[in-house]
Image (cartoon, rainbow, N blue to C red; front, top):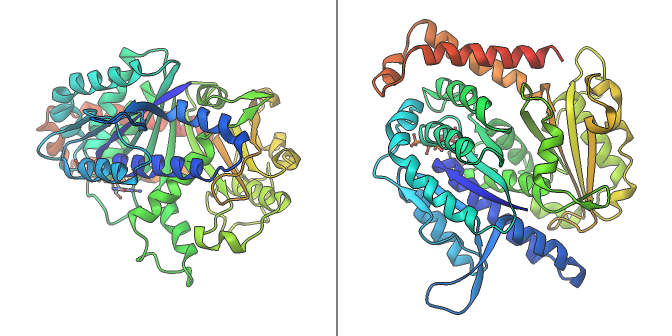
Length: 439
Ligand SMILES: Nc1nc2c(ncn2[C@@H]2O[C@H](COP(=O)(O)OP(=O)(O)OP(=O)(O)O)[C@@H](O)[C@H]2O)c(=O)[nH]1
């Protein structure tokens, strides 16, 4: 089952590059012939074998469409992939214009969006036609800028109209809490409220968390300043790949569509969070050993704490207690040696879940005996639960405070957006927050 990736804006394109690089580097790790099925499945899922222009050589070409309003990031991304010699982006599947969306959702959605949608959809269609078994879309975007958030939302709506049966999974990068784009809270509110209506699954990744995890890899563990987007993107890409590389569930290959279908069983609840272990820098992996009991214990406590970071866990919080997380559903993926022997029973604990989903559907697990890259053992838990509530609440409050003073509202209105869109978006996100708070 193939997935077409849509990379939107600077952030979406840079993360997409890192994701495909990580997939290829994982495949390069395999030396045993029995890995051929894994390779074939990964290649079918994310790449298309195509002839290089003017050559008889075939190279995996990412099943991707790239969209940005400025050309620089896309040019660099395409060139970096080509330079690897192991994979590339497809020809003529890049869409750029001459100026960005000025960190303004309305400029992206109304200004650029209306002009670009047909051409982007044509590119998407070309990519879909290359798939023998097409499953759905993975859209990568930040919610803080104008292109990823505004154009990204518009393209997602168009994909929903054009491909109503396909899976629409949106991976959103949440901005740092402070000090970034002045309109980021408005952009995030508008994006999320609109995406909630058309996407099937929304996975939120916080730049703050990624930066903290990366800085914990440094020898001092304290400085955020040395952490670059490249470092964070590598980490994000690893988490995505641990989740999305082939695995088996109930004796058969687990598709991304199956996984998302089980995780999002109710249209009111589609906010997902990834928890991954171990959290260790690549450089220290050769000197580290991990055992399943230790990894599972930490992963379990991360879910209970609703913390995607291993560091600073509160071990006193127990499932079902006042401060414990509550989930609709979780899907666990275990990769590496003896993965089937890991004790997953604590993650099945009914105290972690709402009562209205049968336990066999609330918690599901898939395995892959092949190790992921240099990680002898690794695990990713994709969770549909309350984790996203805290940061969503903060952004809605901050945006509301600005809106109450009508700050910057005219910047949106001048791109053709009606003020009511803000009100509607606040109302629908309040509803989402309420739904999650009540589980
Ligand atoms: N993790 C990560 N975040 C990024 C990256 N590039 C930008 N961001 C974040 O994305 C947000 C800004 O969005 P961009 O993707 O740069 O903007 P854009 O969507 O291209 O929109 P315009 O610049 O307005 O055209 C901020 O929160 C940045 O921290 C990246 O490579 N990795």
